Structures are given as C-alpha cells and as structure tokens.
Length: 76
Image (cartoon, rainbow, N blue to C red; front, side, top):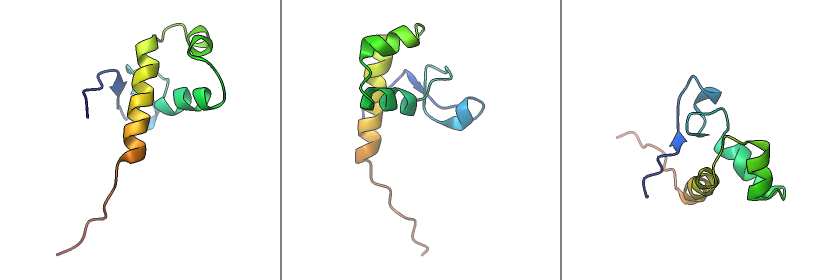
C-alpha cells in the first residue's frame, strides 16, 4: 500500500476514525458524499479547507480497506 500521508488517525479526533489531515472530516464522510452523487467540486465548495488530493486519498484508502482481509486470531 502506498504511503497515504493525508489520512490520519487520532483517538481525540472523531474517535480515531480515519480523517483527512487531522481535520474533523472523515474518510467515510467524503466517500459517502461521493456515493450520494456530490462531485469533487461540490465537496470542495462545502469544505473549502480540503484539497482535491484529499478526496483522491480518501477514495484510495477506502478502496484499500474494502479489499483488506481480516483474519481471526487463533489461540495455540
């Protein structure tokens, strides 16, 4: 996985959910807006402190998480 330097995790910000650059905007918010039909331009207008690369990285992270496989720990 490439280095996603715009996606941050901090328990004090949005409960540790993946956020954009430490802001109170989650990856889920961005992906949800795109899934609802909002364009990148619409999102940037609503959140003027975001950048296009933030949106691209949010999608990259979401796609990676969707493909990630979590395996249960097995006690030996």
